[in-house]
Image (cartoon, rainbow, N blue to C red):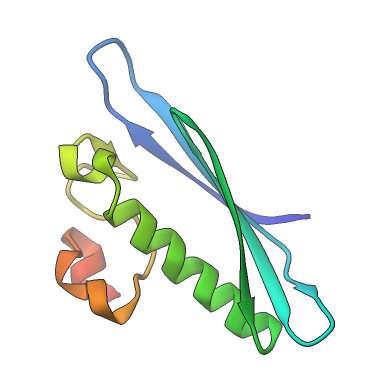
Length: 110
């Protein structure tokens, strides 16, 4: 079940396109929890299951991996990816080793 969705926008000359990011409800596995997320990139959907020792850690790790993937993407590098306003960030945290790439409000608040 989807518990949260955020829609980013990829600005293109031929028209903007939506990049939906979906976070699904964590599920308990035998020895851990997993939280699945999906990013609908223009070239296909990326879906990953992220693990944690409990549901909260699985969600936290999923959010950080989403943020890291967005900031590492060619779309971010191009400067054409935005959430609310260009250059303000995407509202996702990143892993500690990527904090130096944050922009805008992400850099200030996350």
